[in-house]
Image (cartoon, rainbow, N blue to C red; front, side, top):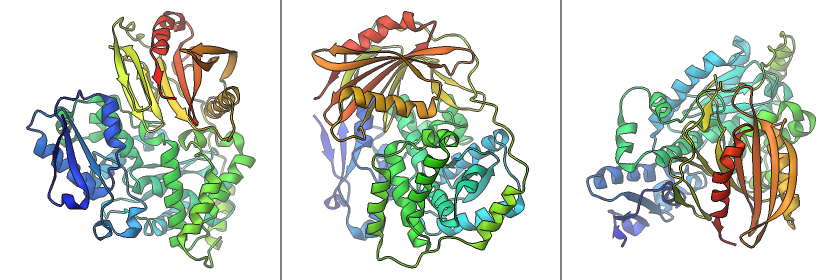
Length: 504
């Protein structure tokens, strides 16, 4: 039975729940993480709770919070409270600094003093208007010499903007929108929030303190757990909910800094229509939330009364002319892939239960579980491969996701096609081999056989996509293996699929 122990001040809505006998499965951790742990004060309480109760035999600790009084956080900050995080802001800065040092060796940086001085001034002006901006954050801005339209942020305030994004912006407000959006990822702590979830999914509670409490390189400790921090790493793969939060915070920052808050949505619309081939990586790293433009417009209405807003500046136009007069960026060398190594061990015959919030299934007991806000990946040791620049991709196993289709009155076939089209944005060589209807435990489903380039160098992969309706959502399972190994994995994939239990 659960044992409830109230902390001092529990009349303000804070409680600690200890489940003394519950097994520490990743799905149960996720349920705790999604229970509304918000803000730095809550994170502090969580850390204290882990220390206080660590000497007891409790195997899972969930900390949940009701809405705390405005006197604690302030009404304005309640709108932008970061999610659960095992890292402190100081650790965010350390992770960002170490990751930035790695990336600087891998990326073709544009080291032009005038461009960097302009970007630094604009970025820090915006950062000064950001909520949840602790003094420890080191706001640094760098330009990647690439025609691709992209930008990304590392924890602690390290922001990279591609030259192509600056050139695509039609005015300073739109470029400010890009920087404000990335600043939103920083202050909402999305990178270390995702890393926290991955750590909990892979490490028993008893050893978390020793992992995160050691001196030395945090990124090295995370790398030992298989959490890569290079290009396309976990910290740079944002969920749709994280994108929506960064949009809201970015719009708020624009308004507070005196820029037209509509500039962010204008930039998204322009690059999607004018530069579809140069934005593949952007929309892979920044998945498009549902009704993005509509939601941004609604957010603008909450900011306050309309005001005279800045749109452009002579400095921005001068920087664009300076970039136009420079030699073109070096040509991209294509998508980096991992070298082939020893294949994973065969799937175990013994299956164990994964109990998630919206589904239950069985998977081999020698496989691992990795969770994110948008889904779950189940894979054998070595099933996640790492490329030469630190990017990770799933080469074996099954990935599960749950998405709400754009259309209101959608059918299963149309929603599946919409999902495949979305997957093609970041996988242009993906193509459909076969699609049929199927019956999955009495429920209609769509089976789609796909072929794609494997993240393992020189190989192709086969993907089996199975989609079913779950209320207003499309539940998707993608079974993945290299083309030559797919047949040997099929019996295991079939067992997983037949074990699936979902709510309607």
